[in-house]
Each structure stands twice: as structure tokens, then as C-alpha cells.
Length: 569
Image (tube, rainbow, N blue to C red):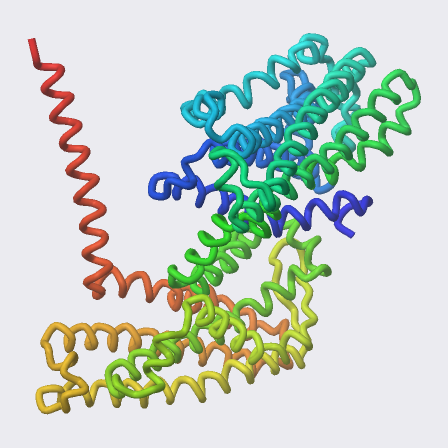
């Protein structure tokens, strides 16, 4: 276990998995607001505002966990208690709960007005509220509600090791009462509104209603509202657990023996943290708009494998050479942390060399057998299925190494990966075999393509698209791209060949020397694609030129307007 309590371990694992996903979801919604009208609605403004509160909650929880159980910044946190650090941690929990509960109320109010008062004045007013005013309402009213607890706030840490927060009885009773009263008032309002929403949705199945409810006779609209109702139901369920936590906090406030309070507070991270993670889970599982964005992100963007490789390299370099999170990473070693870093390198190589093969195959079919049935079928495969084919086949090829995986870190300072001999031989053989199969196949396919391109002046009618000079130059550029990827594949092949040779001497100086070259080789393999796209791909160059030129023109225009305004009499 990472900590003495399973509750803390669970929230740490959840944070490692869900926190980056939540950040990416919120960023994508913010970016999509500029282009897609559906994300400009008040519903998604509230989702973003609620997401910020969730992110703050998680960051505050993790900040205290790292200081308390991993001694990362514990002395600094303890020394800052005279400047309000203890009061900050004491107040943020109940304040952010009231804030998020009020956010659930606003989201429910928006859905209630959209479904039950679709053509009403209040619905139009709510939808026309500027985003900054809506966010100010979301954050301002809970802070106003919580003001009495701020006034009587008085907290300190008991010592720099446990960092247990000691509150006064008056402060604990005040914020507990605020939480309890807020839950009862807002909870009843949420329940009444969603019962009205569900009543309208089920009535519209059989009864022809007014114009306001006619749009919900469509099955898709009803299902959408039912999914949103499930979302709110899960949020309310977590609100109930959080309410019970603060109810018991109120009960123990006057108890002079703090043993019960210490036992209770062990559950705070898991209660508050899971309240935060309901949003990303339900957005991914139930929200069709977000699912469409995620699908288009994965299907429309290239280089996910390259990005993942670079991320894995940096995630190990920072703890190893800069001491950032090295103790935490070492503690995660027995729970799969070491095995993840050990397997990610060879797996991503297999994934990328297989990706080079698929890219080459697509170009070969387009250039050499453009009219064949296989080319037509390949072109009709959905992007999402191509992504699955790319990743699942590579994962299946690499599965024997995963079954033999058994890796540990040597120590918390150098974080050197020690594999067993069977695993080292397994992933080295897999890498060498993949290179031996996909490498020559890629070379043969591109040789055929270049032969067709060079003889395109005398090519049959089926290849008339290649006879144009622009198309020939385009294929030449793509050939250079694949050639450079093949060169990096050869260098990576030699690296894993050396891994195979030294697999029976994992901790030897020779193996340590060889592994110093891994970030350079694997990282440059990842950076080949963006460099080639910028230098050789005319479509990417055109897009970049438009983007930068439009921004430069807008900046110049604004500067001219400003100069005109300042120089005008």
C-alpha cells in the first residue's frame, strides 16, 4: 500500500487515471465553444464552472496527501499555518461542497427550464445570461452563504508529520450546519425540478402537448434528458454521502477526544474526490456531444502513440534527474509503476512500426492498385476502426511480454528498471521480429510505389492521378517521411538487439550505458512526424500559414485602431 489507509490509496489511483482525462475534457469543451454552438449553451458553461471547482478540490486533497504521507512539502505547509494555510484547508472542503451542490442546482434549473418552460420568459433570460455573470453567480452565492464560517474560522496543524487539522468547536459546528442546511434546501429543490422534468418526458410519449413540450416527443431527445437525469442522480447520490460526512463532523464537534474525528476524516478524500470524478465519468459514459468530440479527437489526430511515448519518457526523466515525484514513483513500483515504464518503450515501438506499415499500405493501395476492390474497402473503413486496428493488433503482438512482466525500481534515486531475464528476452524478441517482418514489407511496398511514380508518364489510365507533377512530388515527400521513420526504426531495432544481448546481465554497466540512449532514440522517433509534417507537408504548411497570417493580420489591425484612437484629436 502507498499509505496506511486504503481510502487514500484509492483516491491516488483514481487521480492518476481520471485527473488527466478530466483536464483534457474541460480543455476540449472550452476550445469547442469557439466553433460549435452546442457547447456555447448555459449548460456547458455550468459544466466548465463545476469542473473548475472539481479540479480545485482534487488539487487541494492531493496537496495535503503528498505532504502528509509522502513528506513532499510538509514542513512548508506546516510553517505556513500562521499565514492561513490550516484555515485554508479547513474551509475549502465544506466551501467547495456548497459550491458544487449549488452548481448541481443551477444545472438542474437549466434542464428544468429547457424541458418544462421551453418557451417561457425565464428560460430565455437564463439562456441569455453572459457566461461570466453565470460563473459569478455560481461562485459568488456559495461564498456568501459560507461567510459565517469564514468569520469564526480558527484552525491549526497538530504537527508537521500528521498535519491533522485542529478546528475550534464553534468553527466545526458552523460549517457543518451550513453544509447540512444547504443540502436540505438545495436537495429538495433539485428533487422537485427533476421529478417535473421526468414527468414531462414520460407524458410526451403518449400525449400531444403544447409547442413547449413537442420537441421532447422525439425518442433521442427523451433519451438525452434521461441520461442527464442519471448524471444529476449520481451527483445527488455523492452529495448525500458528503452530507452524511459533515453531519457526523457536526456530531463530533463538541467531543474533546479527537479519535473519532481522525477516523472520520480518513474518508474525506474518497467522498469529496469521487464527488469530483462523477462529472468526467458521466460525461464520457452518457453525454453524446462529448463522446462525439472524443471520437473525432482520436480519429482525427495523428501521433497519439508518439505523444504517449514522449510523455512516458518525460514522466521518468523528471523523477530520475530532477527529483520531482521520485519517492511517489518508487512507491508505485510494486503496483505496476515499474512494469508500466518497462513495457511502454517496446510496446510503443511495436505500435509505431506497425503504424508505419499501415501508412505505407494505404499509400501503396492508393498509388499502385487504385481501382482494386481492396483499396475501395480500405477507404471505407471508419477512422475509429482504423485506430482500434492499429492499437489492438499491436497490443495482441506484445501480449506475451505483458504476461511475463515483473519489474522493480532499483532505488528511489536512480529509478533504474530491473527486469527479469524472461521478460527482457520476450520484449526484445518481439521487437526484433516485428522489425524483421514490417521493415522489409514497408521497403518492398515503397519500392513498388516509387517505381510506379517514376514511370507515371507511361502509366495506364488507372494511375492518371499520379501523372501530375504535384502528385508525384507529394509522393516523393511521403517517401522521405517513411524513409526517415525507417531509419529511426533501424536505430531502435539495434537498441533492443543490445537489450537482448545483455538480458542476462540486467544490472551490468553495459546495460546501464545502453539505456542512456533510449530517450534519445525513442524520443527522436516520435519527433520525426511533426518535423516532416512542418517541413514537407504542403497541407499542414498551408494551415499553419493561414493560422499565423490571420492572427498577425488581426493583431496589426488592432494596433492600427489603437494608434488611430490615441493620435486622434
